[in-house]
Image (cartoon, rainbow over all chains, first blue to last red; front, side, top):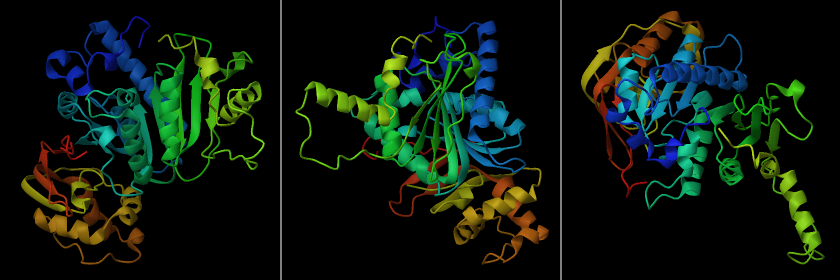
Length: 284
Length: 116
């Protein structure tokens, strides 16, 4: 999205935002026709990059899950590459567009936050383009974002084959949101981290959350890393390990300088130093 | 929670499949893909569902061994997995009895507030 775009998840829940009135001739409310072509191009590029980050075995017809598949833009790319796929989306209107467009994948009307209704070990990989942020807002009073995120990630983990990956293209709003997401993903058993493409370009910068199910993988490098400034990381790796303090006695007094330093070091080990890097860089 | 794995995945569910409208599409046969999908299936559930929608044809009761090299068998599985599509109908969760409607080939898995 260009920097002039509003964040749709702040306007309404996804099924309201992507409804028939809004869709009309556009896939996304508020876009001009040329803007729409550009958006399609960007979506396709992001889908391609997400699939690349999946590191699927070559020459194998893989079965993939597309979370938040919408009208099937990313799904079309998957089909073109010879993959079989299932798309889940909460918007009937968007899925109707996908049906009209006669996408090859199978469509399911479902809410990510209620869990993925698939048999264990079904999918060889999962991609999701610009959808995860919808889970971070409580659209209904009864919604608890952390609970919905956990329900989503744990059911997703189960539905993936061992060694499969899930790649989420997201526009993080702030570091708290990123921490919320990664914490629940880790709780669900995933390892992995963020891959940032073109970290120095506010226009081209893209974030991909890469999660590994069952085996630890090597986090791919972000694009545009040749010109990366030392202080701007293009990867943030987190592990599923909690750091345990062997010696419970002799811990620093809370809030003392030592305690603060220890906490920072702990957070750094857990990959939470995201916040110091991303503070001003969320203009999208 | 119903567990299925796609289209024809409606036929790979742990629950009962009811269909009022079924369509058979023509889908390019990819034996490698079908072979890879078979271990992920619950065979008896597949048979039951295929029977339920009237498309069991001559699928065997139990999975044959060495199916990777049996093209005839793979063709039969391909048909039921990728070509037979429930357009209108429902999936029934075996535990709760809850029915999930299928419309235009799309299962509606949305839970109500009190269910989630």
